Image (cartoon, rainbow, N blue to C red; front, side):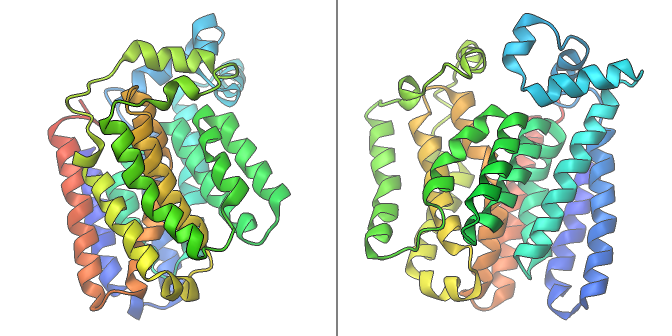
Length: 345
C-alpha cells in the first residue's frame, strides 16, 4: 500500500511542475485517471489497514447498542442496506471512496488553477489519513470543503445543507459551525488582529493546562465522546507545537495575514481559508486533553490546507520553491507515519 500511494504521490509531484504548461483537457484526463486509481486503492485496501477491522465490525454488527452510539446514521443505514443485498464491507469502502475522492478532486479542480500542487499535499498527507483509514471523516471533509462555495456566495441555505450532510457522515463536522457562521465575513483590521493573536492565546492556554473538553455539549454525541475518553491520551507524544502540520499551519496563517490583500485578489475564498487555519489550530491545542478528539478535529479540516498551501504560489517567487517545499513537507510527513506504521501496521 505504501508503494502504491507513494507512486501516485511521485506522479503528482512531477505533474505539479508541469501543470502551468498543460492544456486543460490534458489535466482533466490525468486527474480522472489518478482519481480512479485513488478510489481503487481506498476501496480494496487490505484489512490490516488501520481502522479497517473496526469498520468491518461496525458494518456487520451495526445494530449493536455500543456501535450505534459510536457510528453515524449514514454508516448504519448503508450497512443494513448492503447486508440485505448480500454485499460485504468492501461495498462500503467502495461507496465512501467514490463519494469522497470524486468530490475532493472535482473541488480542487474548481477551486484552484494549481490542482496538482494542491494534490501533492492531499495525496501525501490527507488521502491516506482520510480516504484510506478514517473513511467517514474523508466523506465529511469533502462535503465541508464543498460548502465553502455557496458560503462565499452568501447562499447560506445550500451551505447549511452540505454542512448537515457532512455531520451525518461524521459527528465531528459540527466543529465546522463557526466557519458556517462567520466564514465569508471580510477580513478587516480587527479580524486580522483576532486571527493573529488567537493561536498564541490557545497555545498559552494549552501550556497552562486548560482543556476545552468540558465545555463541549455532549448530549447528541455522548457515546462518541465517551469512546474518545476511553481511548485516552498520550500527552508526551501529543504536543501540538512539535507537530510538523501545526508548525506549517502556523507559518501559513501569518503569511496569509501579511499578504492577505494579494491572495484575496487571486482567491475569493481567502476569508474562509484564513479563518479555517486559525480554527483548526485552536482545536488542536484546546482539545489536547483528549488526544484522539483534538487530533480528529484538527485532521478533519486539514483538507482545506491543500487548497491554502497552493495559494502560496500567488505570493512566493520562484514558484518552483513552493512546489519543492510542499513536496518535501508532504513526503517527510508520510515517511514519518509509514515508519511508525500509523496507516498500515
